[in-house]
Figure 1: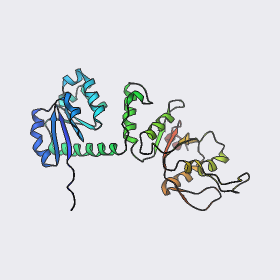
Figure 2: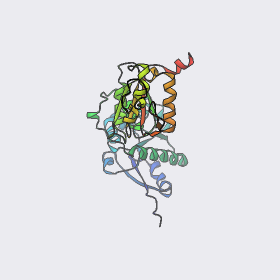
Figure 3: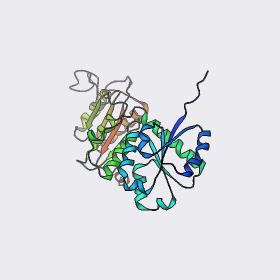
Figure 4: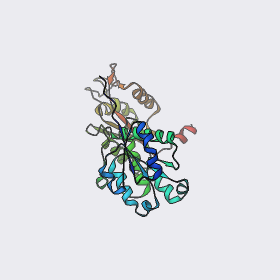
Length: 289
């Protein structure tokens, strides 16, 4: 017999009267709803959190920040339209919350927002490694650094390719290693290759490998960097320096999930996540031809 679906746990922190009036409809929609004050929030495990944001929270923001970071889920702020127009509230919501809802409640919109937050929380929970910021490679407490850490936390559990852009020396490989370390592939190889540092006539062999006798000096079969990264992550630094012909081969690999060594004809299945980095503005380069 098919088991009933597990209820989705919703925690409402510092609820207001409008929040309490919302409870019957949420429970009828399948939510297991609990409520508490801010200081007790971490004692109530939940899948999604709803916080009635007040001026008092902004006077002591560290308590809210600590609760959000340690709960390891997605939070939605509830506030009035007047509060949202205040820069202090708007900035705080943008930086720390998954979404927000203004009072009075629109029940149908609340349910959609909660559903999206629940889906994102589950996605981040699949193999996402909870990071201790004290030992995080990306150090700093500025707003851009915090936003970067938050973005990497969302991207890391996915299998999507990621293009990292930035000037030389800004830490693009550090970002790539962080994505790998927080991913489901963290126990598998991380293989980095600088596409701009390898002679053009060797890069095909370096990436895809070659068979014995494929060219002069190929005395034995050699696996390429893509094959060496099987199960893990391949980081292609300075991908903008890759010859156009090789970019086409790489695109074929991304689409078909297999490679052929230079001089070979046998497809070799390879499972890797590809991360790439460049200091070049690729969109402008394409526009300029």
